[in-house]
Image 1 (cartoon, helix red, strand yellow):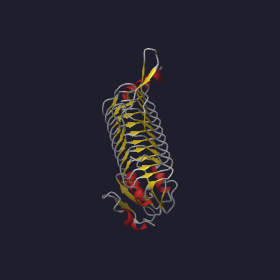
Image 2 (cartoon, helix red, strand yellow):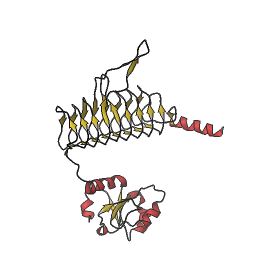
Image 3 (spheres, helix red, strand yellow):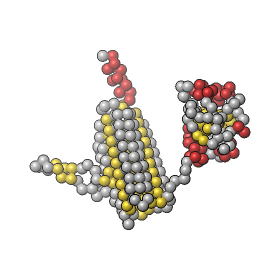
Image 4 (spheres, one colour):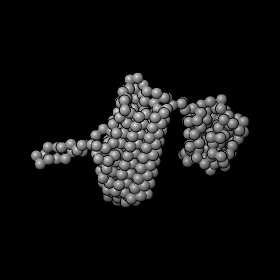
Length: 311
């Protein structure tokens, strides 16, 4: 069982214990509505059933927001609330530290590795992978059935989930006078910086003359297509089923929602949000939210929806 002494240094330094800290004992983690007395759980500040969950959960130890202190006092006789500014982040940190198994290390015997590949320390390459003449940094997890072609450079602490293809040719053709199609040769590669995670069955094409670049800390979901010469900034979120056209650039800290299509050659500014299912046909400035088909600023999109509703 884990107690307060085991987690106090993982928590925010300014945390507050509401209840008797000696009652903090848990050996598992669970959602608040599925927890038992031996579970550690967390409670979202704005949850619509906040009071019901706080009262009825069987968990003895709940991480919650300091903003809800006054609401939680009445439940603290038989429960302990650890109050912090960021409940979810604190829960994640404890769960990772106490319950996440150590990463695997080594190369599965069924994988094929180019003899010229440069592979860092503490790397795991799972079953049925093909790894070309690439560079892979330290502490990477390359899970099963991945294909990584030549001229790919992967930083440290990168996770690539199963079934992903990185560094294949992009879809580039030029039509000749006789209407036949001539393939544009691809001489570039793919650069994936540190701390990136790539979901299952995602495809990242290599560049034509330059490189396709995924910058530090970006997270890419399952079933995403990233075309040649795309550049995605730092700490972006690219969600499932999105399609990013060739040579498009996405600024740092941006959010691309599920099933978004981005036209080739446009620029998405920093700190932008592109809403679910949007089709983006032109560049978006920094710090804006766009939605719709075709995509437009959110305020404009909402006004159009209101007018359509009134027809």
